[in-house]
Structure formats: structure tokens, C-alpha cells
Image (tube, rainbow, N blue to C red; front, side, top):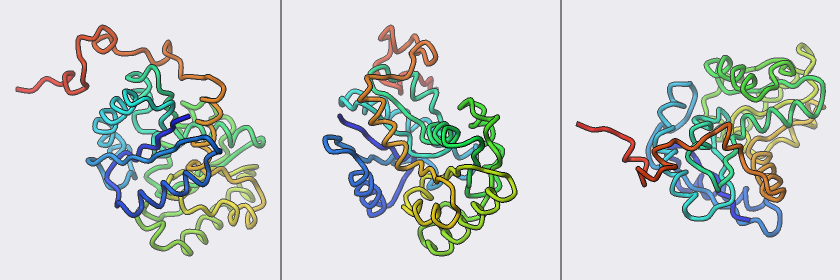
Length: 250
């Protein structure tokens, strides 16, 4: 199977390569996984406004990737920006949002789960995402580590310490049975085992779980529902062949 991970914004080539190697290491034998980054948009996503900024350019990339024959695409942000739209414009390529996917997995691992996010600005939208995923009743809390996305890898040891502290707080005070890392950059630190050892509950890494769920769904012959995410009529009727044709410019 062919799976592509789409970073919804510009990213340094070296970091793209590093993440691509991790994805290849995590993939099952026989899975061809690639990584693509979108060349325009916010450098990091730490607010709903930045999520919305990332959607148009990412949608164009998704539309083209389906034409290249990929079986599944992973939207590379734990906020799942534009997931509904990405699913509307694709009808042969499964599109997964690692945020919702990881929450569903976290909810399956115990009675309650908590999400560890980056900044306070992402707490409200994380609750909204849990509602959309259908697991709000099982969300114990959302805890911020107050570290900007672009600083997570630069200060890895500090990041790990603060994630563990936030995790211990969620387990002890909020009675979380599992923890979900609420940021893909956090997931690509590849420290879930260290956190789990320190905290004592399962840690859901969205970067890895997003890939494994894509493999499982493609292997099971599953596709996102086209009654839930109907193809826009202008596309299904072939009145437009490219997403740029949906824009009106003066």
C-alpha cells in the first residue's frame, strides 16, 4: 500500500527527511510511506487562525496526491485542519486526521484520557476536536506544556520534562487512564516510551498511531464515508478539473 504524510505548511528539508525516516521505520513491511510538505502557509500551527491559513494550499496538494494513486493520506497536524474538506475532495484516497484518530484510540485504552497540548491557545480547540471525534465524554482534561511548536525539538530534554510533568498532573489530578500527545512535533520527538515509563499509563503518539491506523484501514478496505463527506458538485460533475477553478478573481 502507498501512504503519504502531508505536512500542512513549510518545513525545513532536514526535518522533513528526519520525519520521513521515522515513518519508514514505524511502517509495516510492504507499506510504502512518503512525506510531502506544503510550500506555503504558517511555519507552525498554534491557533485556529493558523489552522485555517494552512487549509487552501494543503487541499490543493491533497487533490493532486489522490491523482498519483496513494491509498491513504495523513493530514500532518494534530488539530486536523480542514479534515472535512480534504475528505470531500477525495473519493479514492483515504484521508485521516491524527488528532481525531489518536483521541479515539486514547478513549479505547481506558475510562478517561487526557491530551497534552503545546500552548494554552490550543486548549479550547482540542475540546472541540474531541466533540467532533465523538469522545468528549471520555476526555478528562487538556493540559498545556507552554512550549511553542518550533521549540519542542530544539529543547528536547526540557520538552520531555515538561510533557512528563503535565502527564503526571493529568493522571493524578484528572484521573486520566491514558494520555494523547496533542501535537505532531511532540509525536516526532519519539519519546512515548520514556513518558509512559515515567507516568505509568499508555501514551498515544499521533505521529505513529496516525500511520498505523491508516495501514489498518487501507488493509481492511475502508474509506471515509462519502455520504458524510460528499464530493462538491462542481468537482463530481467535472465542471472544474482543478481546485483553482473554484476561485473567482477580479
